Amino acid sequence: MTEPFDDSQIVSLIKDPRTIREGFEKTIRQYNEKLYWQVRRIVLIHEDADDVLQNAFLKAWSSIDTFHGDSKIYTWLSRIAINEALDFIRKQKNKPTFSTDDDDLGIANRLMADEYFNGDETEAQLQEAIAQLPEVQKTVFTLRYFEEMKYSDISKITGTTEGGLKASYHIAVKKITEFFKQRD
Image 1 (tube, one colour):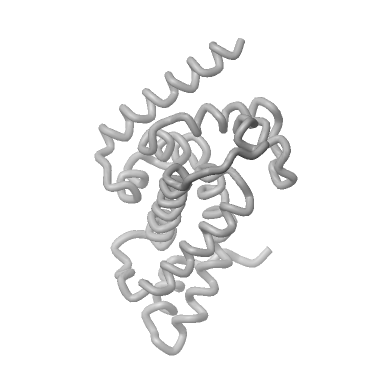
Image 2 (cartoon, rainbow, N blue to C red):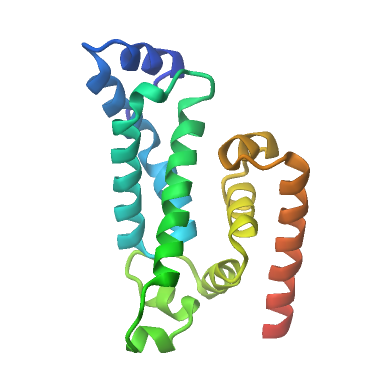
């Protein structure tokens, strides 16, 4: 595994037109896996997560000149990736669907059938519970629970107050707990 790059090194590379491409490539290498899992926990399916993350990196590249270093590169990329994932979910909800066998399967069953899913039945049910949450609760729960992000960092990504995020997180936990109680 390669040595992680310091944000200041990457920012220096990105700010120089001669090394911008190298800086962006290092950024992708450094944060690709972490961002993939952020996106995957929102969209759930491997292929969708790959597509969303690719779109997020394309969007980041096309707007690289808007990154001024006010936040960490990872925070900036997370904001882009999460917004892309949420846009993807919104488009999926609005997309007319034709009845398929997948429509009859719950999220947990679809995840268990996904060759890239490496969780167990409980993890699949947790993802099903999370998928039923409203968008803000889903996002804050995913970032706080799986990524162990601080509320201050989530606030920068989502543009929501820390107090609002804490409330959303606790409501999400209650809903997920209720989901599992109903399953018992």
